[in-house]
Image (cartoon, rainbow, N blue to C red):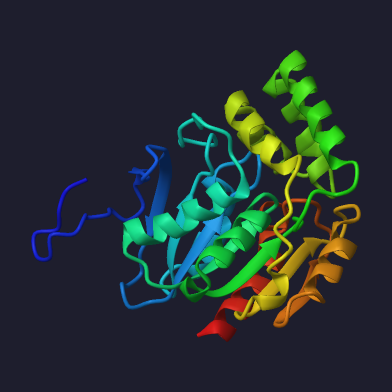
Length: 277
């Protein structure tokens, strides 16, 4: 990356996909959308089997008012396949290290699905770096029986490939399986490298980042698509374990409300972010 001619720091191009090499050698793909260096920052973390484009509608909604850092989780999108086992200490550490690499002192964080425990792990490692957390359709620990379910999903993936997995998953993640966005979602899932999916699925099969919930000091908004199975109830209960936590649902949405119902999701998100200023 080129150096800035005035202060010697790395120069990060707005909007272009770029690679950041972390201290352990892992390369992550990032995209910055910079309104003004004095504007507040928001970091977006994608779900399992998606990439940073899952947040396109949110970037448009925040344009001109917030600086945005999006990145692909390890093994997803353009980020490299992990060369060592992945857990949430590692995934949360990625967020903190990206803030360091880009030169962001503090930011709000928005995480979807696997992005929920990623964000909880990040705030546990560096609480002063986060102005607020918006946690969407995820959990703080593996549900009872979850390990066996994840291992079965991994086995199905290995047998049938990512394309077959994508077809059923895209429809299952949407409140309306006939939604006009289903083809785009299926293509995004199908483009996920299999070994990247498996690495992160292994992390989801046995995790617990709930120990620090009671000590989170920043505001936390937990959000779920109202038709995402048991997750609305799970996240409502989770909000009660966090001192500054509250819950909202997105009507007529499934597991990816930011993608399926962007206008409704963006209204919730914008209200939350404005309250952090």
